[in-house]
Every structure is written in C-alpha cells, then in structure tokens.
Amino acid sequence: MSDEAEVWTRNKELEQQVRKVAREHEEFAHLRGRLKIAVVFKPKAGKKGMEIANTRAASELICALLEPHEALHYVITIGADAWAILDEDQRAFVLRHEMRHCIGTDPETGKVLVRHHDAEVFFEDLADGLSMTTIKTIVAKARALKVDDRQLRLLESVAEEEAANG
Figure 1: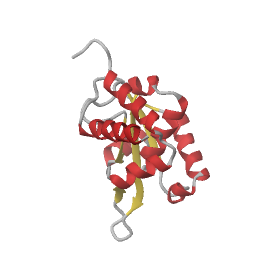
Figure 2: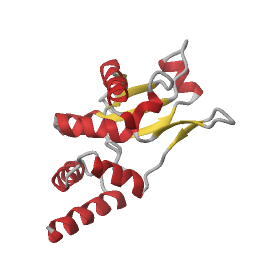
Figure 3: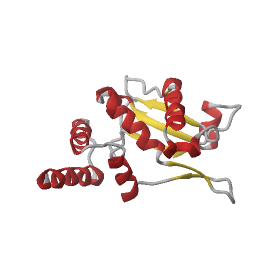
Figure 4: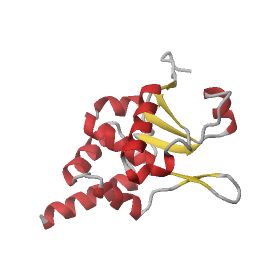
C-alpha cells in the first residue's frame, strides 16, 4: 500500500455546474430535473484509455455511499491530476462531453443507459466548439500524464489530418 492516500471526493460545485449546463443547453434537456448526476474526483486520471474523466451508471453501492436517501443515475469520475492542468474552457468541454454519455433510462426496464464513445459523440464534440488546437492540447496534456491508447492516436491523427488540409 502506498504512503499517499487515494481519497476520492464528491464535488457538489461541479454537480451544480452540470445542472446549470443542462438548464442552459437544449442538447441536455433530457437531464433537467429527472436524472441525478454525481461528480467525484479521484487522485489520478486513468492510464487505460483517455480517462481524464469517465461516466458510468450509478451502482447501488455507489448510491448508498454517496447519496443514501436519494437515487443517483450517473457518476462522472474525474482525475484530479488531469483536471488541474486543464484551463477553464477545457474543463467545461470535458464536463459537456461526459454529460453526452448520460442518455436517460430505458422506458421499458427503467435501466440507466450510458452512451459509449462513437463517431457521433466525436462529431458532437467538434460541433461543441472543440477545435483541432484544443484536441492537440488535450492530447498533449494526456500524454504528459502517460495516458495513451487508441483514442488518443485517433484524436491525434484527426488533428494532424485537419492541420494538413488546413
């Protein structure tokens, strides 16, 4: 066990920001008042995949630990080390990107649904104002944290192709 404690902390301020984004952007209208999203910081970003942040359906255990008297639907987990090196615009983008994974519940089963990465999410991110410069910056920052996988290579190749086509 390491000497450094790995403390995960809930961030209610970012949860308020998520609710504000849902109120202000029509894209997230389905999240307004219906689906509860918790935001949790962990000490380090994931080394597998480009995991500056990650969104999952809230399990019963997570609900019991974070919000014992109220149902949670999603948990956005953010690596504090990665968050610390992003500027405000990049942080806002990361939150909106993670919110795109929160698509609601199955009307028949009530099961919470999570949208996985696909081309549509990537193009929505571009439509959200993610410039090629921002992609390159986020990729560089993720690489500095030794976060490396096929998603990073894909983002990097798209950024390079866009730069070449100018």
